[in-house]
Amino acid sequence: MKIAVTGASGFIGRHVLDALLSEKVEIYAITRDAEKLANLDKSIIVIEFDIDDCDANVFEKIGSPDVLIHLAWDGLPNYKSLHHFETELTRQYKFLKSVIDRGLASLLVTGTCFEYGMRSGALSEEMITKPNNPYGYAKDALRQQLEFLKAIKPFNLTWARLFYMYGENQPNTSLYPKLLEAVKRGDKVFNMSKGEQLRDYLPVEEVANQIVQLAIAQKDVGVVNVCSGTPVSVRSLVEQWKSKKNWEIELNFGYYPYPDYEPLEFWGNKKYLDIILDKQ
Image (tube, rainbow, N blue to C red):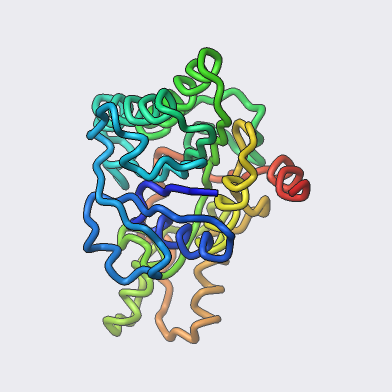
């Protein structure tokens, strides 16, 4: 089996490549800058490619894979930028339609929990989507476009709706790397929100493994939450990190307000994920 990964040099992409190394597959790492993947395992084939390059040979250019794990998406972490639907949505669909038209049989695309909108509690895949920021809207629109395309030209589609994750080499705009950097600087205090939000967090290695297991199944899964299924308060999570790493830094709760683009309490329902992965 040949599997190509776009966005391979990104935070999730690196971990997906690591997870794929445990599988009996040929791996094609797609990136705009091959230098960023210079130290990969030698069994991984690195292809320098931009998704805007959609000519007649686009499928062959990415290795003619059996499965494409599509992680690439520009414009993050600014979830409110109009770029997501003014620019990104169009280029994403154009690329994916091109590789499907030219022979791709199975596609996994990462979506976002922001597609659910301002809903509280456990979020399940059968809920009608109500995104309330441009990023969530654009992702949800891409999903719908692909479903319309699938009705005309059948292919296996897995829409892996991601929740929250953490780990080494995460972009420094996220909570975990911000805390880690503060510790490395020797800061005495780390400013954060009250931390009462309930979220669904997984280590990025586990997220990557779930993505890989969904991809290698080569099934028409549809939408599936990639999540823990267990709510945890941000405060509790940060305190766990601090305790596990023996960090001395003091946590200053309530310094920042809560984000206005997400509800206070939400997490993923993982029943469908468990069913799919248990059947493999």
